[in-house]
Image (cartoon, rainbow, N blue to C red; front, top):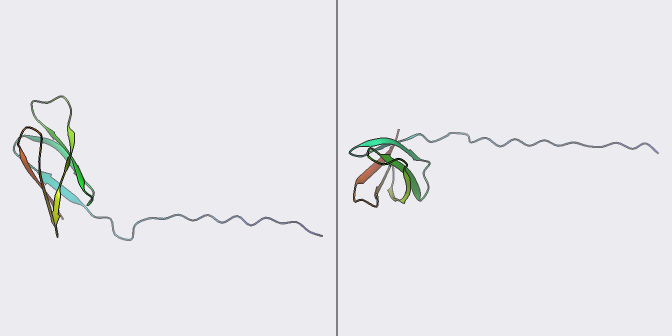
Length: 75
């Protein structure tokens, strides 16, 4: 009796990755992937934070803990 092994490798990549751009007064960097949270780093702060967003189609909006409003838009 012969023994053999089957090796199956499955790689999953998104068919179309979404690109989002975030903007806010004093923004250093922002990151949003289409989910319920966005990372926003503003000038005057050593680090950024993760904040809830309200998503409506190609736009997501939110407010940082210091009250700065931000918008992330799908390209």
